[in-house]
Amino acid sequence: MTLFSDDARSDGVPREGDPTRIDGLEPEGGAWDEASETAPAPRSRRIGAALIVAAFVLLLVTVLSPAPYVIEAPGPVFNTLGYNHPVGQRPANADEKKPLIVVSGHTTYPTKGSLDLLTVSEIGNPDQLPNWGEVIQAWFAPSRAVIPVDVAYPPGQNVQDQNAENAQLMTDSQKDAVAAALNQLGYRFEQHVVVKQVADGPAKGILDVGDEILSVNGVEVKGVQSLRDQLKKNGAGTAATLAIERSGTKKTVTVTPEAASGTVVIGIGAQMEYHFPFDVKIQLDNVGGPSAGQMFALGIMDKLTPDSLNGGARVAGTGTIDNEGNIGAIGGIRQKMYAARGAGATVFLAPRSNCDEVTGHIPSGLHVYAVKTLSESVKVLDAVRTDSGTAQLPTCPAS
Image (tube, rainbow, N blue to C red; front, side, top):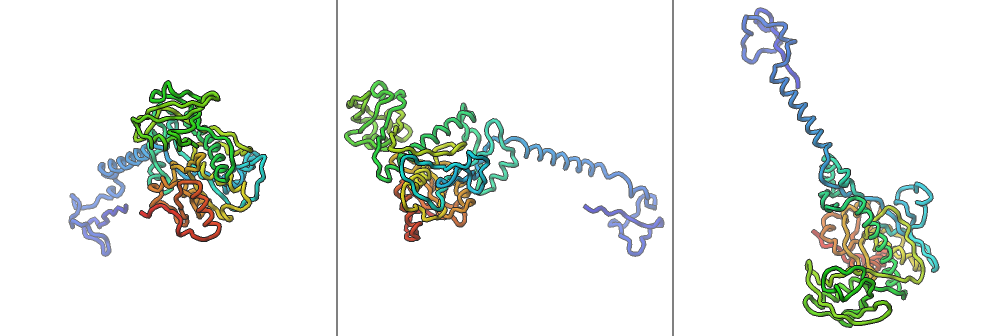
């Protein structure tokens, strides 16, 4: 701000060209006080300046103070057909220069292009929250999401607990991906739906940990999802007949499912057990969760088949998978789409159950196709490889 001071002759007559006082009056006493030019600023002005400084300091303290949120941002991208270091980065050491998928005891074939799995980086945790400045910036960034810390880390769960849970989910996801790939390619191997936990509920005292569930009402159960589907079909309040195998002996039991949280349950935790015909090892450290399942399965299939699944294109995708090839919803799909585009992908395979988060948020230049089974994903890749029929492929509805 520029300040003007009066400059007049002692006789009170303004000089030619000098600025004129807006009130047209001389100071009391008939002459200007030369000392007024260096007089201190009025008290009100000093107070105003002090308030501005105080407000700035308060704003700075607020911006730098912790916020009760965590930020989800696009994370590293890994090519399942390549090595176990992020796309676009040089390996830091020999451990990051290993093939991400290694098949032993079976013929493998050269691959082309990429089948990228995607991750989400989480900024902040209950022990180290982001500041308000970071949160405000993230709110306005389309590639980021801001979520309450209590949602990301439910009460009673700390960072170590969540990391351990995500590590176990990753291990289970890798096994399911191997099973899904081998089933899709027609291999025969042992796969069992096994009871891992019995809670208070309909099955307590009827089923035991270690029981293998063979069928429900005479319909073979090939996976955990098949078990859920058959129980839902049976309905709550109606007795269901389960064929099981316990300690090598087959028997039939009756359990009456109940309704819970909009589904039909019998109060057990079931998990798959496999005996694969050859070894498939996935070498990926420091990445947790189940969302890479679909891309693991496609990467395994590509290595086991003579032709390239993707025709050399850069394809990315996400989604959980089970041994039956069902692709399920995941978190952070917006961040993953931006990560895919940043790595150069032009094709993205999204779980159909995530379409509500995809619509209206697709980065420019990325073609997103909605899939719910591994078979549908293979059809998308067939169309991409042959450059035909992509217009008929399923996509998420337009906003």
